[in-house]
Length: 309
Image 1 (cartoon, rainbow, N blue to C red):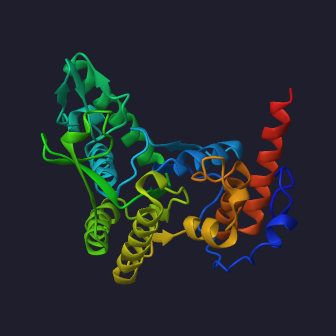
Image 2: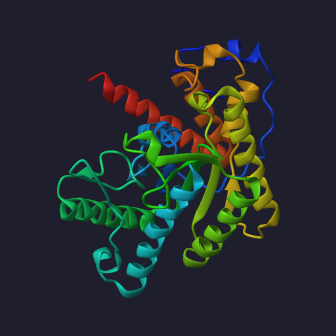
């Protein structure tokens, strides 16, 4: 049942569309730490984990929406985490520098958020290495990794011949916009998880498609993008034999259960805080046992009380 702190009555939601069933899979507990990466919906989830006293970290390099740059960076992080676990060396011993692009006397790391820009390339490289080192340490300690896929549309940076995670407000003529196919993303997921589950056989991996609508791409283009992500994920899961990898239908909950504009912010793209709360509650109902859910509610109530002191 949704916590009574939510500003919108559950009865309002029930008058719209019925809840669809999600098979409970209580594989998580309140003592486990979480590593989230992907779209901005990961940030919304992070806040709710932290409010319930669950240690979590999200998007060390900022939001990354497309699976290619997202999994490229996550692969670097897990490899550093795995190598440091094996030889007990400092993460920096295994870190590699990234390709930087110079424009208007400033250096940019286009695989990462726009804050990864510096006048001094060495300073930028040091920032990237330090951030990745910390992320590898956090991932190594996390029991669960949640990957939130945002869009199938990507930007190809012609000067560096790379699909980027962020355009850094560089001139538009430097980029080509394209859309990945179902097969391309499915194979990408397969290759990534073959490596990830081999390196970390005891971690839980959860994939979800972000409920945030990318309307700047266009309404039809957003629907195409989400359908590609959804289809690619299910194609991958159908061919996967791993019991470590799971799917959570965040996008489906927003689109089917909360299919009303009152559950979106004024930009008509991002879910309202109530909708985010509702999706998070469905997440806890899916992956936490009833007794663990009670612990989360108690922790959340303690957090609320602390905010009024």
